[in-house]
Length: 243
Image: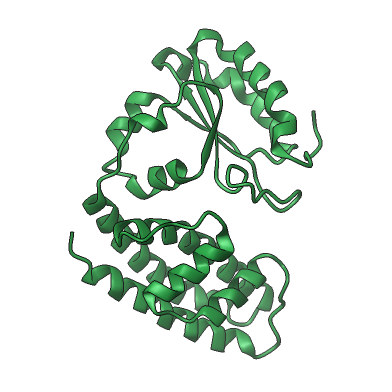
């Protein structure tokens, strides 16, 4: 199958069979996560994200999966995360935000639900959040000088960095003991409310990311300045948290 599906469910059976044929009994689980698992998949705009759990022996067979990975890329399936359960368990302290986000929105399409067996430490989440946000702040400042004269490059900068921040919002709400909304629009509204940041700015940034808004000639610098100010505010709020 080489075309992008209307719905992710359309490809699950064929995709699962491909990976069964490659890994056999070494294939333990296939997990859908991200926007497609939340029911927010948009054809030609969303990737279909998968985590594939293998045995240790299965990792030795990864080269055999190359044709399948290439085949399903044409159907908007991102290169899967090929992991073992032991790796997941041993990496929860190194990548707590990443695994927390996967655990927030996922659906098992084959095999065992390994994610149900893991828990994420809030202190480790807060520490990684602080590092990630302060790192993104530095990147925003550095990248600005390379993009300021090119509207399209600025739009890409805003889009990529916003995606990173949107992935952090559920984690922020979790460590602040706030209920996490399922839909992205509700998540943004709730996040800007509890963090006291500029809702109008973040809605505009989402529109830029989704291709619904194009920067005018002179507004890129103004948006960048406001964006950096808000990121600094988020970093300050995270720094204040004590767990």
